[in-house]
Figure (cartoon, rainbow, N blue to C red):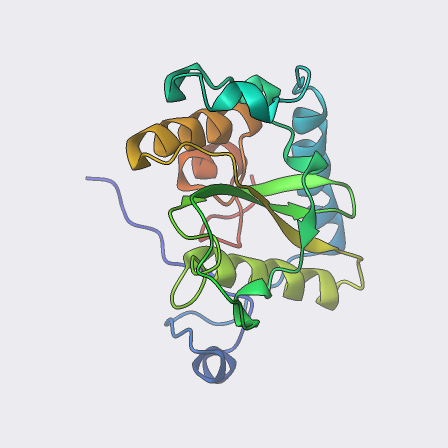
Length: 196
């Protein structure tokens, strides 16, 4: 039976309670060198990912959902938003979308997600918000720059299963480290595994 690893955190227990995140572990220390090495490995992999010519909106409405090619979607070319977008008052709840959490400083894609309501997705609990806090804190402690943002692709399939299939293909393609499917590949203290 595999031993379950504890979630590592970059915050003290009292800070976690203040932020609304409670665990039994003490703060994690990560060196600037280890953090930069991890990010460079990710950057080297993601720079090899090729992107076909962009999707054209006119063809999406006539094409079946499973014909949307993940190789034609460029997360880095989408409009950038602040990761705290969910705190702003919005006139609507949003649309079905795929979203991408990116550190634009390098740039590297950290997380791929899908939602039925883009304006509502991060209200409430979402593990990726904690990973981003830890990631941001590690950079702060090591006096390293980061520029976190989120980008939404609102032309995603309306049907949940179709959207999830596309999300899965993009997670596999980009190997986004905050998605659980890629934890063993990258190893990261931001989600509970040490840098390997």
